[in-house]
View 1 (cartoon, rainbow, N blue to C red):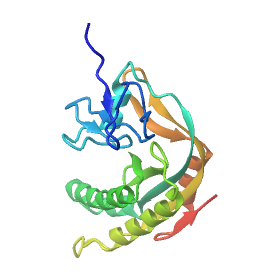
View 2: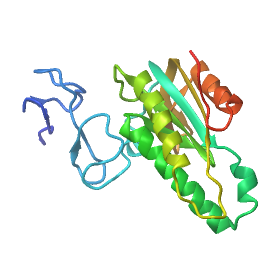
View 3: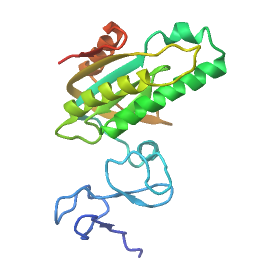
Length: 216
């Protein structure tokens, strides 16, 4: 009979049953093996530290491990490029694609560096979540810092003489949501649903270029 592989705690070295999420000896989060290479990544990592696999999407794709909804307190951030639709009509499609990718790259870096997760890209913008699947005590502060950082980074991009300086519309809202895998049987995506998501989106739409609106 094959012995069930146990999970070693990265903090204290103790071995735990494979279905444990936290170490029974010290309480630390247990690593989750990468579905592609088997590397033990700390829980909360979105991508494998060894092979770069998308851990969250891979986990959701496993039929034996669906994610059930759970209530979480999060901060939701929506941001998009001001006037990009009009600007893209003046550029070649290739130029517009390069431009939006450069901006999204800077916005994504700001989110990740402040402990958030990009939930989805929305054409010339993004939605980010702070507090799910990993929560931190200072998520509200870090979300605001991320908003300030991405605004500064996008405004500071050197995009050529034909492209004016760009600005962002940004909306932030915090509150209780349901975090879950959402989608059909073939594919699910981890996201959050609730009033705070709708409020952040409305605040982003109401903001002026370069403005960050924050709701409760």
